[in-house]
Length: 62
Image (cartoon, rainbow, N blue to C red; front, side, top):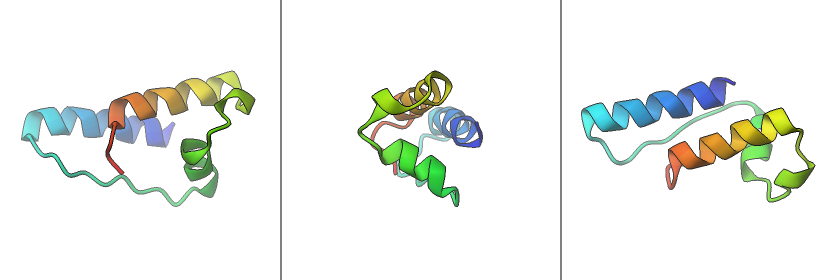
């Protein structure tokens, strides 16, 4: 949930501040694994929906 809130905040700040290069950081190994995983079908529905929204919001940001 923290990663999703960060992605939403980043999207808002990018629109307001007109900045392009944004880096999102997390120390949660599980969250980073979920975001990098290609096996989204094996994730639970709640996690899968959050991961998909994060990908939609962040696009090419790291």
